[in-house]
Amino acid sequence: FWIAHKRQKKETVGMLVVDSRVPKGPSDGKLEPGDVLVEINGVTVTHFLDLEDILDSHVNREVSVSVARGNEMLTYSIKVEDLHRVTPNRFLESSGGSIHALSYQQARNFSTPTGQVYVADPGYMLSRAGIPKHSVILGVKGQATPDLDTLARVISTIPTGAQVPVQYRVFSDRFRKRQTLIYVDRKWYGPPTIWSRDDAVGSWHQTKIFPYEGDSEMQGVEEGKGVNASNDASSTKIETNGMNGQSPPDDPKEVIARSLVLVDVEVPEVALADGVHSKSFTGNGVLVYQDETIGLILVDRNT
Image (cartoon, rainbow, N blue to C red; front, side):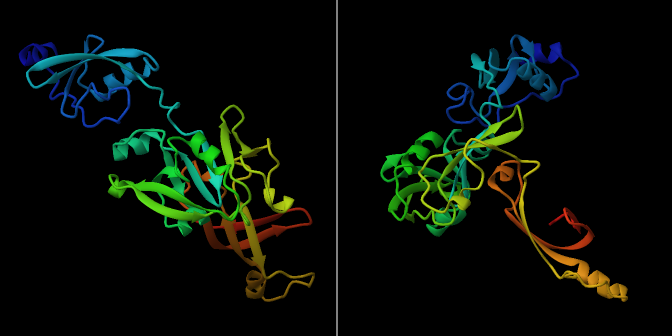
């Protein structure tokens, strides 16, 4: 067996080996870590580029995969899953936190099934209850929450001010279920909202899942309207020591001093899904232009 394949491709040194698999994925129950990849659709594959070409051309279709396991040659029919389909395109925003379905990338890193309720950012309410970032929520108020839709339905039944039990686990201790109480506080953040990405127009659309109980100004964007992640990427507060209508001073140092500003940037949840590493940024800036309608401020790249 080994001699035959070595003769078929003399220039090849080594074979591709299965390193891991995602639980409940297409290859679960078929491929095992340590399996040596021999053929796909009858073609000997010993390079990653050849493997990628075959998989990319068979998305949402099945391929025949032959592997060597010990002294056996095994062949399985495995569906090539669409990576875009298992990439989260919705998230739940609740009390400053962001929750979405566990992505394929994170599921692969932690060897756990995709689609679980994953805490990307705990925000105020969850962090107050001790639920950290990168947790998986297993249940709320005694009801299992295997996916984001179920979690949204359960949360929509919980009134403001209630205290409810939440069961969760962390990947560093994945075999132990943890329990805590959360105090549902929507005074400052408004109702929980589901945001859905519209790839056709490059915007996010929101759907509120709980009747709003506060001031209408706290609701932000009206329901049904999109938020463009590139144009409305942040809310910025600027404090400046301006001229206040006075004539500019003669000393250049005084001119520069009065042009300095402090910039606070708060990044919305829709931008965090694109990989922004923090929600809040603070830095100094210099006012380089200002008229009645617009002001331009020069800041460093980390602000």
